[in-house]
Every structure is written in structure tokens, then in C-alpha cells.
Length: 325
Image (cartoon, rainbow, N blue to C red; front, side, top):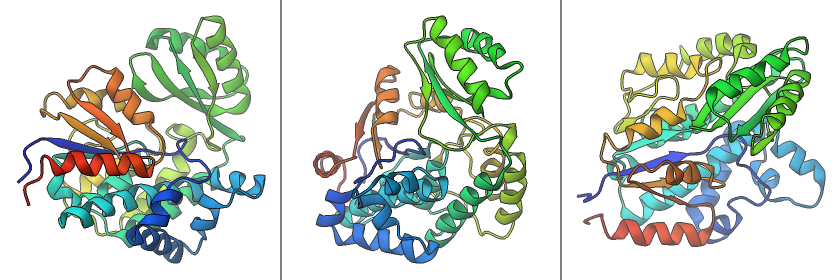
């Protein structure tokens, strides 16, 4: 029995860094097994890419979508498996809700019992390949913090004559991600700085995700999803595409495909937490981006990062208080 409504959230691309999960890898056999599984299924040595800090080439590899997504998935899922092993129950029995940011949706769906491990890894590999194949004019992503939506929309006008740029993620009232072509992004960033944005900078992402430049990738992923067995999530799963809880497998497939060309409605998803009486949120995976967004949103829910071994151990001690075994 769980005496508290808990949500687990999973980060997406942009949170990765060399060495992520290494302390967990050294302590837990289940973490090592998870990294090995992802490497075997994908035919990519993600352990080396995550942990080898001997040269800058490794960092460049980690920032490529095909490695970023797999390494982030391995880190996130390995933490979920530590929890499952500690309490001898699947994560979806502990979680009142799960969700992820962008590719974190696949981590969430695996942990919700909707996708098999093999299908989640295969879809992430295919998704990354499709994104990299897209002729996007060497595009990318940028973040703007400290302006409201109308101001950001005005800044986007600076892209005229330089290429395409659009809002791709709405993460907080004054925090946005924009996607587009490089010259257009630089023009928008410059205009945002002129308007007084606290932050206006490029993100560590090499493709313009969640915008119309990903249309070819959307079609390819949709075709791939037709062949995948998606089951109803066994706990509440919030869709990035709609911002709502979604359970029908066909709807889940459509949402994953449409996510390629549509933004992440993270602000709306966070806004649902009070409606579901969620009081604790644990971010499983690298970094603390989602933790910060949730804690700053005044949702009557406290978020905790699990990036390091000490954070995971603290989380386990907190879960021990609310899980009856």
C-alpha cells in the first residue's frame, strides 16, 4: 500500500553529461545490467560514451541524438529498477503518475508497463536516426527565460529572412524552448537579449526537435509505431502532446508520432499535479531541470532529483516511509 500520491518524471535531451550515472553503475548490479542491455539491443557502446572522459570526441558523441537518448534512457530506467529491486514491486505500482519530457516519454512508458524494454530502446534508436536524417538546414534548439509568451512570439519575428524558428516547448510561465534553423535561432536569441531575457542561449541539442522541420521524421516514426505492441499504461501517464492522461494504445502511438512536430506542453502537465493530489515528484535521470521547474511552479508538490548516488539513497529513504511492505 502506498500512503502518498507520487509521480516519477523522466528528463529528455539536454540533461546529459559525461559521467552521468557512474556512481550508480559502480554500486548497483541492476544499473550495470541496464546499461549492458541498452548497449546490446542498440549495438552501441553507451557505457563508454557515458563514462569515458579521456577526450572531447566522447562528449561530441554523447550530444548526438542517437547516443543522447539511449544514454539518458539507460540512466533513467536503471534508477527505476533500483527502486523496483529495493521494494520488490514494479514502479507503476508505486507511481500514481508518470510522465517524461520529450524522449523521456519513452522511459515513462516503459516504467508504466506500456512498452517493452526492447521496443523502447528500438524506438528511441529509430527516432534519433529519423531526426538526424531530416534535412533541417543544420538546425538546433535554444532556450529563452524571463519573457512572457507574447514577448517570445515578438522575438520570433526576428527570424524573418534568416530561416525558420518557432516555440517548441513551453516549460514554465517565462521559460520557452525554440527550435529552428541556425541563422534564425541566432537572430531570435539576439532579439530576446535586447528585450531583457534573463537567459537566451543555444541548447546542447543538435536537431530542431518538436517543430515542422521534423515532418519526415514524424512519418517514419508513425510507420515504425504501427509494428510495435503498445499496451495501456498501468498507471496515469501524461502525454506531452495533449498535456492530459492518456491510456488508449492507439492514442499513445499517435501522441508519440505527433510529438515529433509538436511542442512539449510541460507547463500544462505540471498544472495537472494539484488536480491529481500529487504531493511528491521524483525526477529519474540526469540533471535536475524538471525538479527545478516543478519546485518553482508552486504546485503544493515537492520535487527531488536523483542524479547522483546520494540523491537516490535519499529518495529510497523517503519512499520507505510511504510504502507498506
